[in-house]
Picture: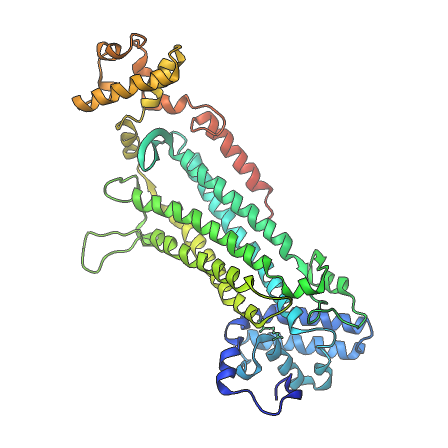
Length: 460
Ligand code: ARG
């Protein structure tokens, strides 16, 4: 007999039973469901809505059910639909009438909203902890490579020289914003929906603040319709997760390029690479590729949630049961990706010589040659054109800028002097970029200190 079977004259069709049951995936929420019910029961007892003895009986039995679930001794029943009714059914089997009183002044609509919020609060913290560990790793790489000059690119064409530290610090900024987004999402998740009832609250004199305090919620929801209809927090998490994946995916793309034979900027540890079943020489950056691949999947989860919600009238609709698989998928994949990334970065070898060598050619110092003239009063647009002609000349003669004689330089502008060679040397080009946020050692030292200070402020 269904918990809601009173008005029905026949059982659910077997196809429907299978179709609408969510226990196969929402059993993940068993802990939150039981903790939520314990707080609800304690509140019902305190308010005299049920007797204290009944409340105690419920709480004790729920504790036992929790232990039994954790010991693998509970078989969930597909017919009981979801985790909420499974727990309640087991409770009633065990303690009879007192169990039947647990659902007083509550609906599965506010119950499921509560369970997901409780679950998400933990998962947001767990995701953030991994993001912070990744930031630690990026900072360590930055500290080690402040002098590792490498080419900076735009359009994947050599642009201006930077350092590997500067490159890693760029990712630090991205993941720092991701951590902030998770904090922000946490604040809006940390609101107790229980007490919203099915949609219109309840006539019973419940104490919502007591339940919020028991369960560690910072606030209670302020509108019962919104309390059961809102999944913004889940969408926000999926959006934050998508952004984390997007950042990991861009880094993955670079790691894949850098570990290619054409770049050879880095070598991934054997433990974080895989081979080919046919080509004996292959060592593939599969982890980075798979993270890049999973990014699309997490975007899909966000899309699933957004589209699921867009046409729903207030308040609860069964469509919303579809939130869980997408959300769980986003959580699992972003966490797994972060978890594998941290040691992959830690164990990778950075080929400083190759990076430095690559930073030398390809007219990467052309901007500096133009700056040289501009600093000597040639209007920048003119100096840009002069160096453009120089580059064309070099290309015709198979030379780099630094290979030209002073006479050749002076054919293009009499302003060039002997000190041009020192000025366009790649290490000086980096060292001269002292601007805050720039790649010089001075600037990256400040960025590293700021990054450390931020990391140290984070609760862990
Ligand atoms: N299993 C449902 C879900 O996940 C729980 C809420 C069901 N409420 C209802 N009135 N059918 O959304």
